[in-house]
Length: 292
Ligand code: CA
Picture 1: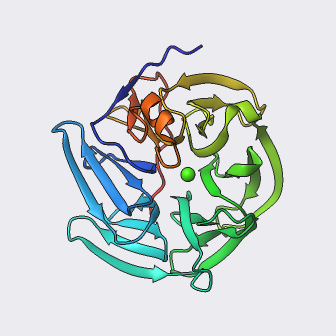
Picture 2: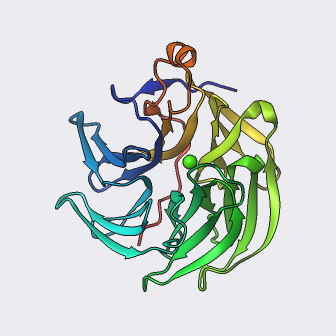
């Protein structure tokens, strides 16, 4: 079942590596280190590694056709040019909640950017999931969220899959691609305590979900229609945070991880905690990432 062997992409360990994004145009992988507010980019062909410091915590980034990025930072949505090293604020729906920060985010099939928040001190239910529309208006989509995390849309654009990590669930909503409306929440995957907590996720060309498991030491491929587990990738670190497909053929899986919160003994046992991993030639391609 577990044929896939991981490799470390580069010799760099993040505090809280997250949100990998494959940029096909530039053949680079991007990811964030949330706590120090860094956006990392790595070019496999040249092994060039760049770090852009945003100056605040950064939860997620999404690529735009212009080559710029939409980012969910601690203090709201920004447009970022890595080339010009500029940040332009777009909107902050939680200006009244300074104890919150943005976490995971992604673009939907219509190019709107969705991202959720969480309490920096992990207060239950303090976060929410928001949608930034193309006219820069922001609407709240899910309230009473504790740790807003993975997002994915079904290949037919009919369903939104979503993770609020402490629930240990992946839930589904009916999704209207025209309006961005969601409805009819139901649980499609329930994890057990020994699995850890579901964190980030991505969807493949078959409509299956690849779910990173925080404190679970693994990524699991699941069928959201049946809940069935199809494949497991075991990793040498506990805090697996997210994954995305990339590479020439979009069949390499990039996997982020974290070392934050580990005690010294755990750090000694997990010298690769915080690294970016790759599983090459998975035999399955990712679905194309949506952009603005
Ligand atoms: Ca996350």
